[in-house]
Image (cartoon, each protein chain N blue to C red):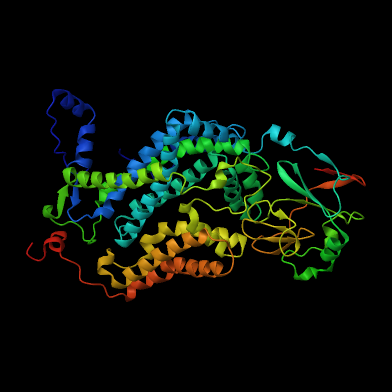
Length: 175
Length: 408
């Protein structure tokens, strides 16, 4: 192919650039549906609607697991000792400092509701295990206390708190 | 591939075809007349073995797809029905599962060979980088294939590996949700992994074509690292390399068959015969053996983000090898110090693999940290400095001289 170089810009140069630019914009626009289709679809989002959980059957000291948005949610009916343990820790000494009061709803100290997914790489920690009375993650050894706070191991953050509210004293609504 | 072809088809039909599509000439110049160094040892047969394994994986994979259902409620059952009901299904699945392990075994030997003999050095940098890309694609394909079984290990491997992306600050969580197509690993994840697992082997095959093309442009390296200088330094690919490759492929198949027929589950995990359960994580989760060294590096570092970055860097750093190794001498035969550091590095790689399967506590963590430091130091400290300080042995004048002595 021979190339003709011209010192002056011609109308043909303009056409080349304009055509190329429109083509590039079109190709980029086509990426939008290609990428977006991988995000959660309408049915997945619909299935993630709030759920109501009756707390009455959960006895003192028990941890139950429910599912919301395909994620396990731990509901921990904490005993007096569990609450005291969680409150007696020096907050500043924690890897992810948070007082126990920021982890529960006011007036409902006995109920801890956390997402049951280790903040390290997503395994489900085992309840009532580890050195701190909360959870122990079998994958990489992270340990959480009775407030769901990370105390030891590679996880960077405390167990996440799902959005929830008390509908009545014995019923919560997650989501 | 260069120069006029010496291919002279005898039959009229082939002559007719050759004038219209010179396919015969291409095959002849690439795999028959192609000059290969006369001193290639058996470590050079693994390229052929890898091509064979890719073929085995594609053929068994296409057949398994005819019986597999990519749905969370049916995937595990369909795999069990392949094992129990489908004619020879057990054989095809065991070939595919153990074939993946053999594929990785062969690729690791192929890579160690490349590093020992300096095969990545100028002018073979692009050839080497294409190889690193093939390896990355293999890792992705192997991981997604393992998930398709939808056992406990499959599910939790998918969860842990996709969660690696959650370490990215700010955009990590949306990326993970995008990868899953939901709020956790689920049916959309399984479906897309199935689609990509079917696609990737053909992408690999495409990059293999580029890899072989680049190989045939620069020519093969050889155990001396000295380029062929005279026609006497080389022999034609057929019959010499064809027969040598074929013989060792057969030997490799004995090992492969031994696993398939006598210990088909040896490399797997019993937990993966439990259907996936999103509510319970198995107490001991470990990846397949071929990912263990990288898993050990991830766990050796107590910080999540840095651990994930180190995991990625441990693979990506391979692509920079041609520029990190500053020595002009290719082969470890003539590099006494490099040879020692290299074998220590091989021991460290295998050691990391061993540590990856151990619980992350006590002495194992300490060893994993020491080994991780050496793994990276080999690339970014030892290799650049060796090029300056190492006193290499004299190179032979030619391949023939190294084989026949100075009388050649």
